[in-house]
Image (cartoon, rainbow, N blue to C red):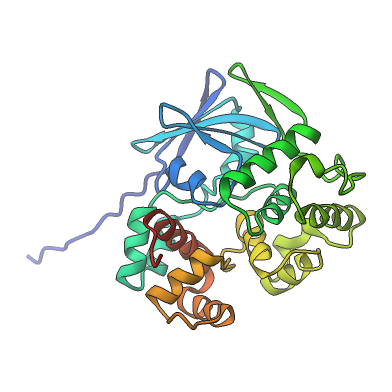
Length: 302
């Protein structure tokens, strides 16, 4: 009798339950709060002594931890998890599939192993846009300081775990701001860009609500109607808030990394864009985050 070997693939489904003003998600994979919140894609999260992270999104301060495939999100309901936070953390996306798709060489595999828990957040588009305008030629600690100050000046006050937080202001809340109003932020020339972005979003001249339904290039062109929004800032907004995982933001770290690992030190931004699109395809932006996080944390090519 011939023996037939049958391979059974075990698929672990995520299960979310609500208890004591928190949601517990079991069966989670490819997620580390540290990797996700510290890889440079967002600016409202801070590490706690116990290794968890506290931040604010959707006008809601929360605390997130994850260990041994179980994540805990404090201060939300199951309904809020299903309607907002599950998408925010990109938990419906199979990152094991993405990792396989972009693992073309030892360099990217090493970067993936290092930042294995990165997930691309689906942030609120207006907040992401203003935050990355502020990020122009700026260091992360200063970006976080300016974003926090802007939120405190114009955002809604929230309390959680005996602390005060401020939601990021909406375009409506910023609709009448001037450069002079933003002077306390010490944002420099970026203040003019913020004012221009608010005005164009409010007037509908720039339709940020339709970015996810546009083609990648059309969405990028739409964002670049805003003063101070170039290819890098536009790609950040598209990758981190509009579901465009093919977007490949190129800053000094990414440029240096691609030049060091794949091309040469004379490679231009256009050449790097073309390389990323051809080499990593639809998941170029996810590969970018693994490479960026690895190179920044390890001073690659510096």
